[in-house]
Length: 631
Image 1 (tube, rainbow, N blue to C red):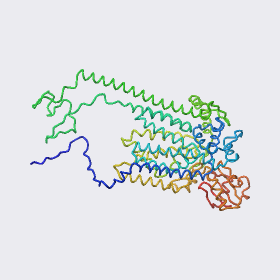
Image 2: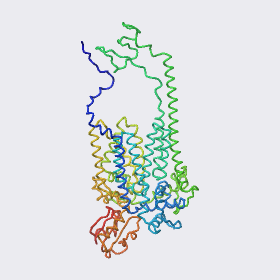
Image 3: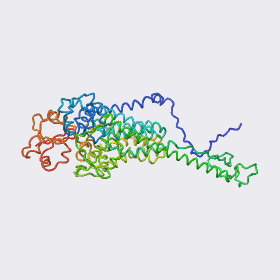
Image 4: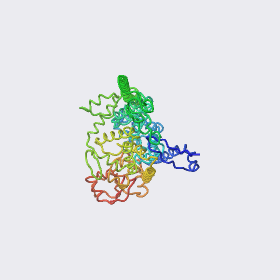
């Protein structure tokens, strides 16, 4: 009996690779427990992040901006009025107010002064415990930072799978800048989290626009109701919403394609790899209508009035569908904008249903195109006043410090340079590779606008600002970089997955090494956290967070010594037991003992302070943000 030879089916696709046989029982336990392994990993990553942030929040004294936000949140709770800090919308401070309500501080609404003075009075002169009050004020921001981690995981998983989502979450959970600002009662992380959420929901709207476009608008409204620096994201997310609505209404083909006939091969096996040319019979004869073996298989010629009518009908259908998609895209963008505006109004109404605006400090007048733009915005009067305050702050001559150079004004490349210093090298490498991959790979290319446009536009807008105070103005960059990094690993390339894992581990080790001093972090290429103060200043290094640690160090190592202090921050040194004088108010010859200077003041030292530091001997450092000298 003749053996039957089996032949593979010939198609236009490349032949499949041989499947590697794996023993059935080798990965059986892993598959059996796979369902709970990923949730367990997510919980572990977020738990270590929570532990790092809570530990940091417990040990740090108030930074420069925090007393203002806490006092404003307290005024919202007790007086329900829009009086302090109009330059920032209320939503982030309402979040802080959730913790302040638990702390239940004593508050004197009759106290008059600037918003900074009101904050210091609340913390240090009203009978409150600043340690307890600040911890409760910081806890809601910590909780929001953890929720943002879930958005990072979900966004990355939607793009590249569960393993990529886990890698993205690990990069986010170990990012020193995210931990540093996520543990403070400030507005930078809540704004960045809202922008990321709006981009993710706009991406999901490609499948279910009716559900996700309003949610994307709500997240966008939350961003601009937290910080006005998020306003450039409004046209970006509106455009993304239009793209999602357009994609969601993509029509099917108007009629199925005409099937091709098989062409015989010499061996008699049919081939489906090449379509039959129009008007040709299987035998290759000319379209005479007949062949030696029977009638022609080519069918009637595709010409004449019936075909032209069909084409005209198809064009009309496509035109109507394109118009429908254009209308859907426009409606999607409008829905996002309207919902965002509604959220802004709702936030202000939540503070004061009567929308009374009684500013404690004068609001500057803004003229020209900026003033006309402010008046055209459909937002509450207090929001427009806050924009005028922001424009007034932008017009002031601020000092900056970058790579040892002190300057007045701003440098357009300040934020990119500072991000190179403050972002872990592994996150930089994976984020850049992921950005390239999402553009280069056809499968991921539709996600490129959602993943790259928001951070690029926001960074470009921030680079035009006049306040070179730190990477907190671009905190969205490491957040989006973590999601972009998820696009690097691919299942078919084992070396890529191993390299990604090694870089994620590098980020984790670098982050753990800086614990618990996250604010002055710098990556290994720039010498690590001990050298950050030589390169950057302000919230990159020293934001007043180590006054409590300084008090402990003086009691432990330098009891009874004369202390001369130049401190940059909102804390009150005497409250923590630091009794010191300002060395700049007396002749240099009278300054003897310990000279304690915040590193931001060291970086900007000129004149008498510079002479005092130059003639002193460095003996100690506290929190990598305060230097101690012996004179």
